[in-house]
Amino acid sequence: MKNNVKESAAFYREMARLVPVTTGIRILYLGCGTGLEIDEIFKLNSTARVTGIDLSEKMLEILRSKYKDKNGDLNLIAGSYFEVELPLEGFDVAISVQSMHHFGQEQKLSLYRKVFAV
Image (cartoon, rainbow, N blue to C red):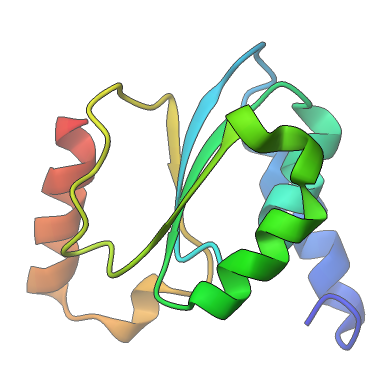
């Protein structure tokens, strides 16, 4: 998307600006895919620690390969964020882009409660 839609690049930059710039910020990234959003976040928050969850192992592999140098700061989990047990260490920010619209209100509320708990 980033390469095909001119407005998308601006969107990802703007989204990244919404994440506070804080040393070691802990981000829960639901539906992370190949990390288009995190590309911009890492530009502003180079010390961010990200836990990303996505259904596609193939997409996670692409994300891993882009950030080999972030081994300890990138925890990627293959699975449904509705079913995966979230790490209990807590997070400063939770993000999800172009993923939540697939679900109904009850599913979203259940997920929001789960995310809020950590």
